[in-house]
Image 1 (cartoon, rainbow, N blue to C red):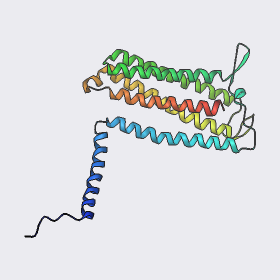
Image 2: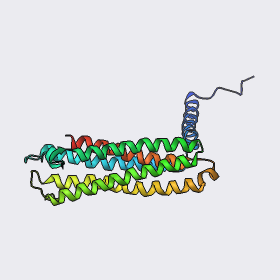
Image 3: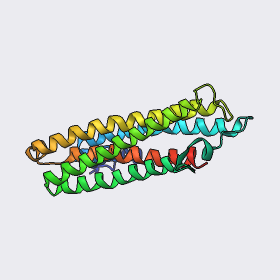
Image 4: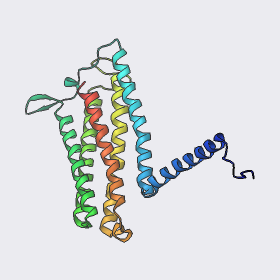
Length: 231
């Protein structure tokens, strides 16, 4: 008697196996991201897109600087600040950098205290971070005012390559806008912490999401400091 249960063709088995593997791959991706807070995922997507924008600005700046035939203005002279009768190069930029890096530390502590359910400490550290950010923006406004008074414009400056002004205002202005938005964002989050909103939800993911944004802003400034002020 003939055997009715003949083995399936190898091609059919391979096809079924291929579909199963594909379904398993999609399912694993779904399982991997299922427990990720939607706000955190959206923030990562936003930061990724912003990385491309800042990256384009910095690459454009470096391309212009390496290809221009006119000498680039000396940053040690352009960004010098006179204190007690002495001209100190980059002193204001160093203070701004120290403030912004310190704000990253206070933000990290705020996230830590948030997950410990310590509302008072978490809110206080977020406010301290916002104060650091506001101080940074204030110093940047002073820097802009000083350079404008010295004759720096987007189309020219007294020291050298005309592209310096447009590069400076574009890169630092875009970053300063991010810091300003971040300060407002942090104050809103601090208010929500004090009201107990995150305790009611049972999660301080909102504080961590704000921290992601703030750490990104700090990291971008480190790159700007390295490529624009130290190069």
